[in-house]
Image (cartoon, rainbow, N blue to C red; front, side):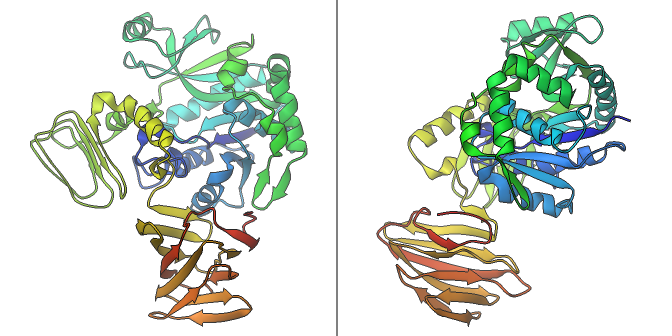
Length: 470
């Protein structure tokens, strides 16, 4: 019986969902439509597939590795999932190729690889299961199978696939204008391109060697020179950097003569914008999608989301309002796709709001910037039970730690001591130091930094249990 190797692509940043999605806390890690993240929902969807599933593989960027690992641990699946780390982002073609080469080192070449993006919503799981069964059969016959979504509207934000007789694909079409999308909908043989694929390892690698040989060679070397760094598998960087940055559609699917389509109607959305999130979310009697501490008066067909404080709206219609600790977005819902232009400007101006939230997650816990000004910064730091920061030193800043909950184990120079609640200690610039939590409850403390430079890159690490360098 044919085995299935599921592969989830968990890269990308989802800039159109800014300010909720950030470069270091991307869309797939967010809880948008339920109480688990899109990544966790995708993992659970795959876990629900019938028998003959091989251990899941998740491909993720280096900077998101610990957040991804934490979400897998929350599901209790850390022993059933391999996390492949991309040292650089090169789009979907190299990522899928790396996963296929890695899978071939573990499994038979007739294994069917099922590739899914981590950040999509599927509201009809039974239709998804049926689509997988059909795709598995076509893949076993030697086809590269793509899932086409039955369109219900003339959507201009998606690419389309033109279907011919049987399961044959005639062409892939870029995002159309409104008039063209209406024609596609009327003709009935065009489907939204979902980015979900199925193929045997043998067929896929043969077709990649034919149509994208340099990508295949580079990723074979990257996997061969890669290394296990529990719980991760790290791809070798120089070989991956040699790859062109290409999507799998452009590199392979639009060129191969072995493409088949499985049409599915599974209530799918890539949640690629705030408008798309409004479309798929439950609404109140006025057509509003509301989350958080929100009070509305005379507001219709709007999306209002409050993360940290009360948000009040009066007399709004078809409006988007998203509040986070460090940014507020206000726009007509119809202009939701334009948010990426704002993010590009924020990035060009080197503002940190495109990369980080006020709360930043680390493998040992998190920190929240409470206040910042020239020569000082105040943080709230949480260290998980049993976790410890690296043994480190700063050239340009000193740190004053005040424990507010739990007990801190502190290394400073050649001394190790404990700091209890309502006690404090001081770390001067140039001193080696380490913070640990040996207790059973989270450690919380306030850190006051002073110095001429307070950037996060002023860290010299001497020892780190998480394999970080600096």
